[in-house]
Amino acid sequence: MKNPPPVFPDIDPGDELICLGHEEDLADQGGALAPPIVQTSLFASPTLGDLHAGLGAEHLHHVYTRGQNPTVEAVEEKIARLERGEICKVFGSGMAAVSAVLLGLLRAGDHVLFVNQIYGPTLGLARHLERFGVEHDVTYDVETEAVAGALRDNTRLVWLESPSTMLFRMMDVPAVATLARERGILTAMDNSWSTPLFQKPLTRGVDLVVHSATKYLGGHSDLVAGAVAGSAELLERIFYDAFLLNGGILGPFDAWLLNRGIRTLPTRLRAHHAGGLEVASFLAQHPKVERVFHPGLDRQAEALVADQLAGFSSLFSFSLRTDRFAAVRAFVDRLRRFRIGVSWGGVESLVITPSKGDNDAFLAAQGIPRSTVRLSVGLESPALLIEDLDGALAGV
Ligand SMILES: *Cc1c(COP(=O)(O)O)cnc(C)c1O
Image (tube, rainbow, N blue to C red; front, side):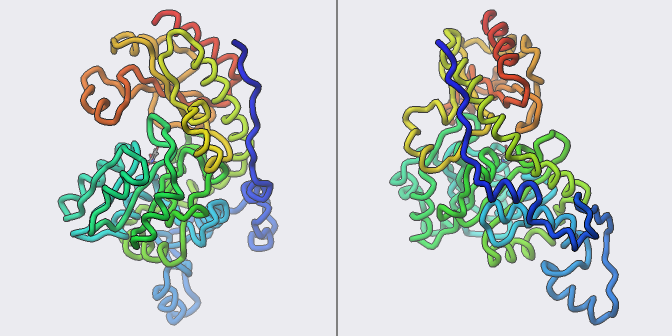
């Protein structure tokens, strides 16, 4: 079977200009084409009165780099524009962003509903919050009626991931956002997989978008960062109730690196989209492969994909036709062009398996086959990666 030709996704030309920096005001930075790195911990004020005014509204003034900093603001403005949010706040990691949303919006007695397969540490944080009286449930049934049935009187937040962690399962985001809004419940969505170039949840009724900017936004495996975007009102609450007090800042240099990564995001994502589809299509027709979990190859998700995604990133998984963990481990170890490691979204290809040989119950609860292998397809030529996979599959 011949591989399908690479399909190029639609990237909004305005978004491309935002990424490239056409919206940056060079006069503000002395004409420097690359933004300066304002590496300072504090900003001195001309008078004590100015300092007090700044401390009274720290989200709007440069007082102290645990609050605001110009280099950090430059990348925040970029992400806010791309997500169509009023405001974006960046954090020292994706988990700092997740924490700020949960800690900023919830109090004892509240309930959070997580919908779809969710990033593990996000659920780990939810379990931790039980000791502060915040309750939660997870529903893997993403049908809107099932989500409605899982809501409680004290549900304050619905947390979504689409495509989901590990199985990349789509869900009807606008339907669930509408359902929550009708009941006065806030929604937050982890959009790390799609990036704002391929999906803009805020335009579909979601209240807050969360990112691990460590992944595609940074894109070069050289920084850890997170972001939250949404309305000025919600972001102000998060700024004062969580960000400023928790102190999970992104330092100026890492903010600068993130801004630099975003400059090439459109180009990288076009290549990731095409390369990921080409590798996934190869695997889908391979006799040693049981199933491929990629939203672009999921017939049942066609309508949701057409409605919600402008393209595919290159993180997906597949299951091998074997039940033996030793065979999965040997397959991973045979690969030469995929580095073995956590994380994803960088220029180099990566491989990992959620299987540890002794965690079948954990996997089964989420419907994840024990022979699942996850790939992050980098910017290498797909032919090279396919050759490597073909060789390693021969031994399964
Ligand atoms: C990695 C990841 C996070 C956490 O981000 P960090 O930058 O590692 O803290 C959150 N959500 C998803 C889907 C992720 O893959």
